[in-house]
Length: 111
Image (cartoon, rainbow, N blue to C red; front, side, top):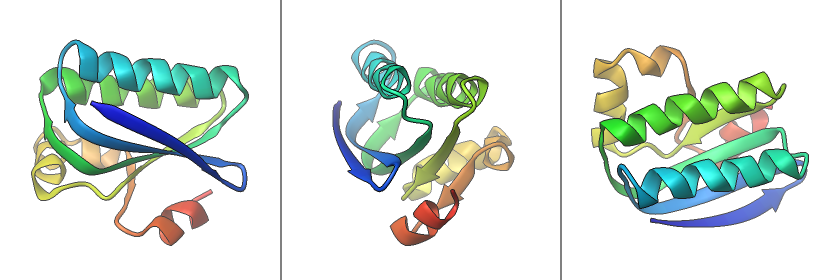
């Protein structure tokens, strides 16, 4: 799991690649988002375009991340979901929880 952080205006974009699975993958997401929140970032986009696998722990981490960001008065948007992740979120009814975009400009406009 690799996460690259970049900033566009006051929005922090986390470009994730690899697998979000129990252990290293979920910890990477959790720690990176915590760091952004600690540094005052409240507008976060998780770009999942290069995430090739996510397990139930990864889904749980997305929910946990969403809750953390929201509780801190921030907003989390998911970007570039793969077909498989989109299906998983649809099955678990989580597509109704997350704001999801497939275009970075639209995601940025979501703030």
